[in-house]
Length: 195
Image (cartoon, rainbow, N blue to C red; front, side):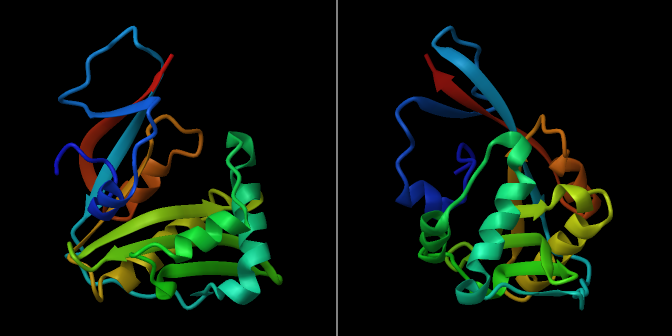
């Protein structure tokens, strides 16, 4: 499965859109067929060192936190024009890898300022960090690292390893955050959008 950027269950479950091709760096060749190409990193954490929980991070309770979670995610990605809605969040909770203990938040002054969502694939013993976001006014203060470390701690109780992927060229530089939390690797993937 070395050619697959997403976790194995996503590969089995979802059809790739017909206008997008995804290539591992070893297979990618420039082609006039594409009008836009994005590079993505993929990192792995082997969970070898003991991890500690962060007491200031709590579970997301979907029924109570849905609205705040959606607002927090949308606010965090407003510069990238990424938005989610209730249907998106409900769909995530129906994934075969959904685990409510892997949805976490940080609240400051009654406001959700950071959140993280991970999944766990029982078949491969893989943890997958899907979403980590910090509201813009709280970025660069260590909250993202706390969210990642908490997710790693929770995943260390069940997973053999954890993966994460994201856009390589990104103003918030998530790759640097993940590397500072012990992720490693240099895999590059290409998302190629057809004309």
